[in-house]
Amino acid sequence: MLKGDGWRARHDTVKLCIDHILSANDMDVTTEVRDLFSSALSTAQQQAFNTATSGRRRQGIIPDFFIGAPGGVRHLYELKTINLCRSHYSDATRSPTSVRADKIPSEYVKHAQTLDQKILGTAVGVVGPVEAKLRSYGAVRPLVVGPFNDTSPGVEALLSSAAEYGSIKFWRLMGASDPASARGYLAWKNRRHLGFASWRAQARLILDRVPQLSSGYSAAAGRRTAQRNIFFRRDPASARFDFEQSRARHGGSTFTSAG
Image (cartoon, rainbow, N blue to C red; front, side, top):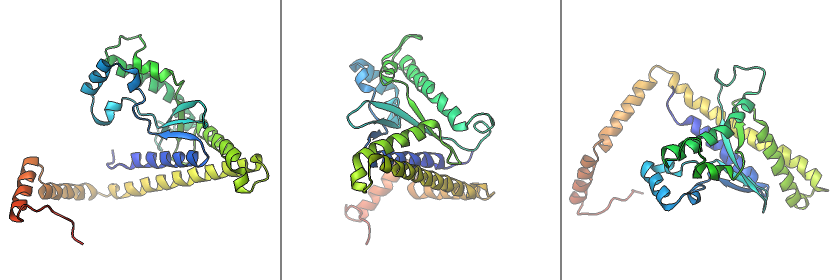
């Protein structure tokens, strides 16, 4: 497997683009929905969850979006970006993005059940607090973007909804004759905006991977790691000793950047 953080960077680029589109069209959107399930847990359950997890995992489940019309009901959405590989693009009878999208709702339910059973002690077959909270929002709505700018039906539906709400709010400001005229323009603009962001993210991912195909990449990466370890010291105690000794030599002053 190639190293680097290109997959996540591509996903986040598409995610932020969707956030910008929805916000610009006056939709109610929250991106990276944190602490959504904490209200469903008792104090003892929250303590058990915090003890068993750390960092980002402590959130349990972080949906990519919480989206709805202004003042209306909101729904959970999950974005996946898939890549060109045999597991996704081996079936010519169905769209790969649609196939991946169909799996997302059940994956979310299974994830919630795992958290309930392994951390909160919920018996198998019993609906725990995390699963109950998840189900209260309805099925998670999937969004999938592929490497060829191919998208699942949910992406097109969401962009169309954004154009609908944006046209109602901004058609006069846009100088359109009516909301229907503005809707067509905004639908085109939404698709174009997401399309360019997706293509750029895919191109950056490919360019980021090209140097790793060279036989000298691993050796160069090893040299960089070795020099970094020497400079900062892998042992925190040694690094702290060096820092304190340096401060003592400079009369206890703190270090500031030059310039």
